[in-house]
Image (tube, rainbow, N blue to C red; front, side, top):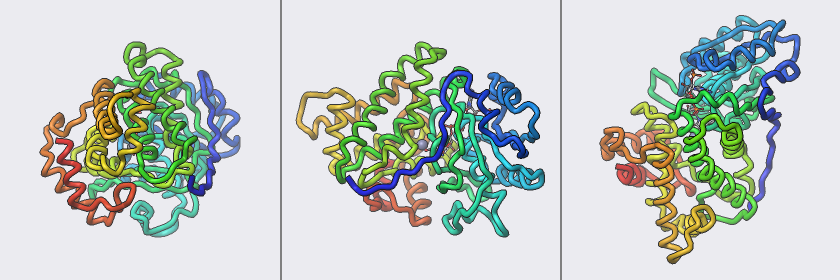
Length: 386
Ligand code: NZQ
Ligand code: ZN
């Protein structure tokens, strides 16, 4: 096990009816800015629950944060927060609303200059408006982590930042709020969670037996629950399990004592979203099997372990088991209902590989668990996803 520091101050408030707890979670004397997306919260009753819990408070609203939240929208929200003196931001929605709100929190407290510098890694985050979340889509883990991913129209970039200043003070997770998710978003959430676990688990270097088993537990739970949610989308227990998986998938625990993390799939995936507009999770379903196939030799011991412990494969030697583990993962993504090939999106893999590799190289991105996947390797990976 490598040395590690684990710090996560988010108060998780989990379960049916818990939105009412907002009363006690937000300080009484501040102006609260409620942020939300395109309107799902007004259709599924979540907005009404939030309004009821905040009755009597000074509340302003900012709606319209889009999936893959846009810098331009967030800057308008930050201006409103500043103008109205918002002392607390409450994000109500999916990962995009929360990520956007994390950026708004930072931008509203940013001095002079353009806060996009934070996204480019050129400026540190030193302050943020306190924030909390009512999370309605289990996928990103944003409810219990320091990350936010923001897209910028004018440059076509999609970049991430991380700062402990944007840990939500609390996150409310009521599985009932996810009953209204369209199938596509439920599927996306399962794939994104699965990929987050894999990015931390599927590395060759070092051993962290407890953390590895925690990762395998999340993977096994996803594999068990995915068919159930398809059959019974209104089953509270199933929705609750998926929600808890998403949080544990990217709240830092699965990185404890782990020598290296990968994230090549996410880095390539973000470029595919920026270039072609494919949903975040759907890019991962296409790229992750390709990354594992390309890196098979290096990842072989962990892939073989995953084969036995997650997929129950008992036959063959390690090499055969490792190859089967990748096939089983790809088949799982397809069974969830998510395509795994670029051709499913009518995208030319060679052209896409060239464009993605160029963009990552221009940014000097360090890719893969060893940080050594260059332009050629990225092109080969994307080609494998044809
Ligand atoms: O905008 P509204 O109307 O709310 O509708 C949303 C949106 O259209 C809808 N939705 C959310 N909850 C719903 C619902 N519809 C019905 N019922 C509900 N309960 O779902 C659509 C997609 O929402 P979005 O927030 O975009 O999805 P997700 O949570 O998957 O977030 C994706 C974003 O998170 C980033 C991605 O890159 C992408 O920008 N990520 C953030 C991470 C993080 N902060 O740690 C890590 C991830 O790897 C990822 O990169
Ligand atoms: Zn993700």
